[in-house]
Length: 204
View 1 (cartoon, rainbow, N blue to C red):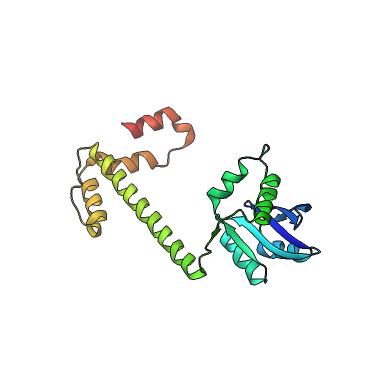
View 2 (tube, one colour):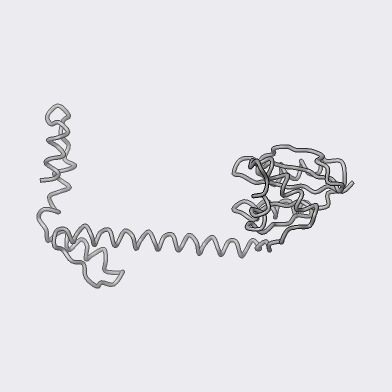
């Protein structure tokens, strides 16, 4: 008997539904979202596994690679198409989604998505991390420019290599900013000053 296995993947658990070649639900379960656990579950089933399917998502490529290496036939399914098909289900749960995916596999109503190689995923991860760092640096730079502008200090057009020195130069030229750290962070016994006094001194 041929089996079609639908996986609805979440971070911790994966809802699994197995449909036979005759369209009958053979088994439903919940398995850890890990290639080893899913592989073991699939290989324990009685019957020939025709196909395993899951939506393309954050964990899907990792799971796809692990299941494929175990010799199982796995496909990634185009997300928008799957979501469109599952909208017709009256009750939306992980269990129902797994069943819907299994039935789409059984009927052949799905569009496969290419699974990127490990090297391609590594490059994409590095580029994503680089972009995040760049955006963080730009946001920090704009924040510093805005804060100093409140004191009439203009950073102006400056090369990235001199930005740090320029900020320190502007801060050193303003007596209020130079004295602020010592006023705000000087050790003061709790009994000697209440919160309002301390915050007022920092704002002064």
